[in-house]
Length: 307
Image (cartoon, rainbow, N blue to C red):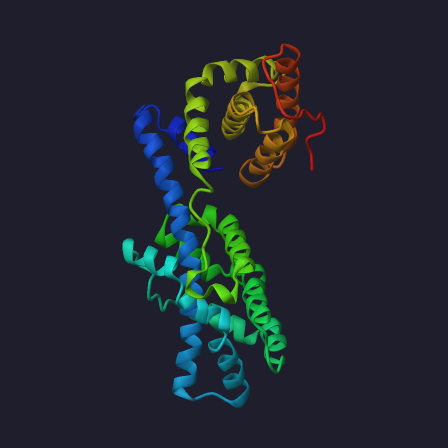
């Protein structure tokens, strides 16, 4: 997804600059910002809990509000998160604007949580377990965080990258919460920016191949879209197909159907309503041609790419 985004910007700005090194630097910076958003969401959990702490300190609330805020304030998962060494280390090493963010979005989300049915259900548990504590926050990230318009505006104000990244990063946060183990205490590992060195190399190689071999991929795309008016093919669709072909042709360990499904999902999320079917048809024809010519050797080749 990041490679597609940066390639789109690279080609759109080609009249002004054709600086490949700068574009590759932009790719890595974009990935860095995504990883920052991942940490932002964990700090958001802590900041929301601070809202509950402040409500309890003021004591100007009724018994029901007190009980709900007290439950939120004493959540053991959050207590463990506050002591997390990796989170603390990241925040110490990076200058961030949002560390102690008592924003309108933070206060609004706290209010929504307190008024939600899921919080009332959680509060009804007399002695919540650590798993109950985690489940609460998993549900908050599934049902409340994605729908917050104020949070969306805040993310947009903090970084031009974050609105597009929010949905996938929320899924990473939920995955991380699932992995939390109380016995790990402050040593609980968070997800790394890259799974391993090979993962980082994949992003850079995919970006390079998408540009270096662009003429070959565009020729294949043109050959299989002869019946289409070139002006009617969305520019982003061409970028998506170009990147997909770079992956299909240069990473033999990745099955074709896996690559296809990934880029069809990107098309559904970012391009037109008809793009995924169009891209599926064109790439299917190209892959069949390349496979017949033995230019693609893959772990698996499946004709039906759709999930």
